[in-house]
Image (cartoon, rainbow, N blue to C red; front, top):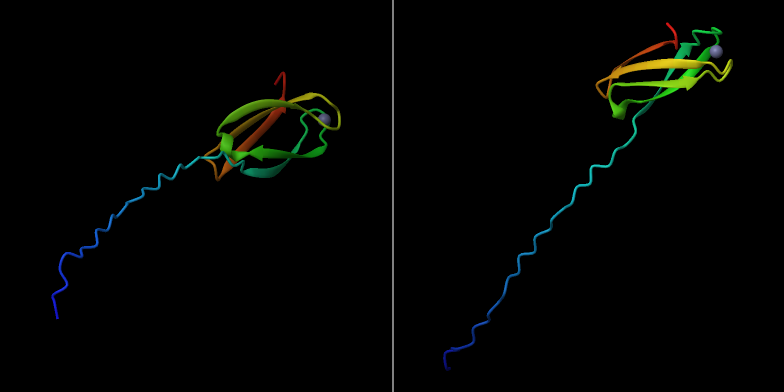
Length: 88
Ligand SMILES: [Zn+2]
């Protein structure tokens, strides 16, 4: 028996690095909140996007079409909504 020499298997190990690109996709966190229109007093349901942080915006009342000011304070989980008339 001759010793099995010279047979060296060179094995290249390729370390493949996976660079995971984490795209932070803004997922809207939508909640609904009932409120009363400050003009006509009708109950309306507002859709709040909690992922956008504190915000102030104006939407027309779906009943009387007058502009309602929304003041939304949120930390992404809890929220507090104030609605008022434009001239209040
Ligand atoms: Zn209204």
